[in-house]
Amino acid sequence: MREIVVLSGKGGTGKTTLTGFFAGLGHEAVLADVDVDAANLHILLDPRVVETEPFVGSRQPVIDPEQCTGCGLCTELCRFGAIDRGRVDEIACEGCAVCFHACPAKAIRMEDVISGQVYTGDTRYGPFVYAKLGVAKENSGKLVVRVKQRAREVAARENKPLLVVDGAPGIGCPVIASLGGADLVLLVTEPTAAGFHDLERALGLTRHFRVPAAVCVNKADLDEEMTAAIEDHCRVVGVDFAGRIPFDHAVVRSLVARKPVAADDSTEAARAMRAVWQRTLALL
Image (cartoon, rainbow, N blue to C red; front, side, top):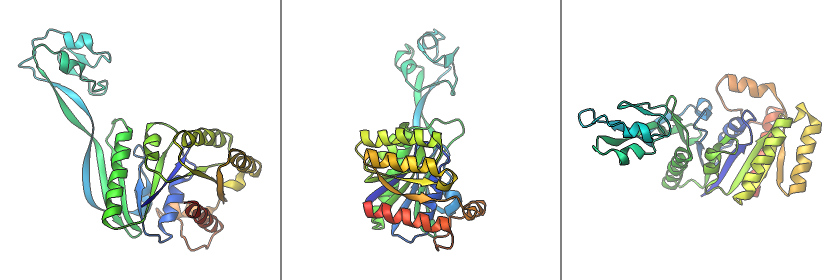
């Protein structure tokens, strides 16, 4: 199985739109959405959930009031101010377990915290795996890794040769976790100063982890000069340029209707996205 991860240096460039378009191309593939902070590919693919798995992202202390002697040592040692008079502030607590190890009365135990859910679903386009975090739950690469593991398991079981992952924006922990095991990264950017700047940071990340990358520019015709500058930069740094996608109101209408952009080449954007994916698969 080969794996393509769709990333961007910043949010809103069109990763999910492009991944959703790929779903309609008819390739034998498993799709996954690891942007767990704001997963939204499921809105376009409308999956029927067949399996749900709780995700334990951390552990938090629970104090037994009958055993607690009120010595105050846990309050004194907690660097985060998360324990006061035998009460734990779940928001402030980082789950470091210092209180658990230090309590002389053994009145504190560490319990698993369910941070979110991992969903495996069926869609008209094939298998799909995604996750959602609970309210006020912190994201980490652990959930990203679990989604990818689950997607690989589904791909192995159903003998799918390709995994396409809708990644998170930026260059932080979830993005680094997204890169693990990837054969190719498709970076989606936009022709703005912020898009160019954050693309350079994302390319630095792929170089650091030695993952081959390709770049495409979405809404490229909104600033032809900036688009040309991005393409020239790719040429200078030795990164494959996968193509330009023009702004198209048909894309907006599809997203409003909660559907992927139709892969029937009926619009200019659809033709451009098909060409980007053909180039990307050729590089793979």
